[in-house]
Length: 151
Image (cartoon, rainbow, N blue to C red; front, top):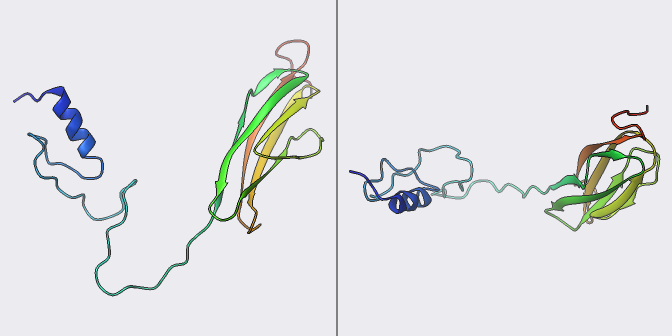
């Protein structure tokens, strides 16, 4: 029997966290087999509580440049997408060209000379400096002759 497309879509949406043995009108779902399944919450434990595991805190960051390549002088706007599970995130940028570091989630930097520069951003927790993460991106600055990079 052919099912209407709308019903198939509904079945797909309803099966986000459970498996179906078929969708002949969206019958009762079968629960997923035991074990970890990405995107699912763990099963609720029955019985007496076990040992308590302390919460794990962490930070994560991603460096996003407005461009990764261009002619000198190259102006690049950098944005950090990141957060910490404990405290406020503090961002610090290093540009790899000998210039002083910059702070904040969004910074503007000009690369004056041709070369390849490794730019990094580090995020740290304001309340726990041990919580940190770092991301890097490479910026390529060419000289006046297009395609030639001075070393």
